[in-house]
Image (cartoon, rainbow, N blue to C red; front, side, top):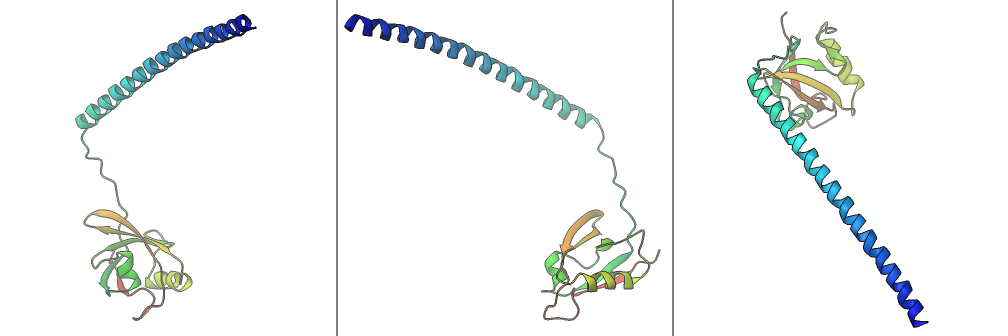
Length: 154
């Protein structure tokens, strides 16, 4: 019985030992493949960085012309909280944009129909497009926004 148990244990040890060797070989292959993969990715990243430095980054994004300008923002108002600033040039106000703007009544209608609902507003500030979310709502001041917007002469 004791000899049989040793034989069985010895056999199991040989099996486990063989499995451990297979496991080590597979892990070595995986490690080598990972090193190669990371080396390729690093080389590609370095190539891309070198190419991007060679190419001039003068690609200008053409912004649409503004249809309105912010000429007053009251501190503590929804407009102030959203980040709107005096001098911002409006290129999108909810569904109103440069292509469909006719007069300030367009903006007033959007504001009235959007009380309590966030509106996407895009402005040009310092030559860059800035997007924000502005929620028209009642506050301690006049109106639902707390800012004054004037049309831009086109």
